[in-house]
Length: 208
Image (tube, rainbow, N blue to C red):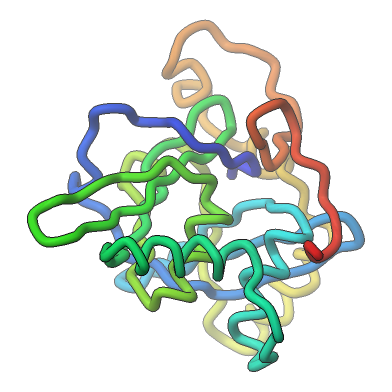
């Protein structure tokens, strides 16, 4: 399981190479961060991504029914996209490198289309506002460990209990050695962080 997220990844690769559609299964909050669980719609896998509190709030507020007097950052971005005549088709978590997720936002206007680099948390915050599909590349499922979706009441309770102490390294240490060496010599795996342009992004409160 990777906790990181970032833009700029999978350059030159189409996001149509057997993407899997997902939806938000749950968003768990800890004192310092959030864990976003994406559910495979045609399977039983959960993909967890650690994100900052502000990013988690940006996603959660869309489902809360709370009406804000002024647009937040993701509302502003979506409004800008629409005002330029573009539509958001889908967002794709398209790659994972060095425990860091990468994503792209797919937009189009007539015959013109663009793929915008994005962190997964920002892409998903846009997706829930635009009502578009959220997809994950099969290469991401192949490169990182997933969790089985709890089905029965007992499994759900066990999932909730284990979630309280779940850490990224708990998943990474179970990955096969072959996957660790996939991109070259093995390196020490550090607990990943939700990355911005320069290092780990600091979790924070809502933007003003």
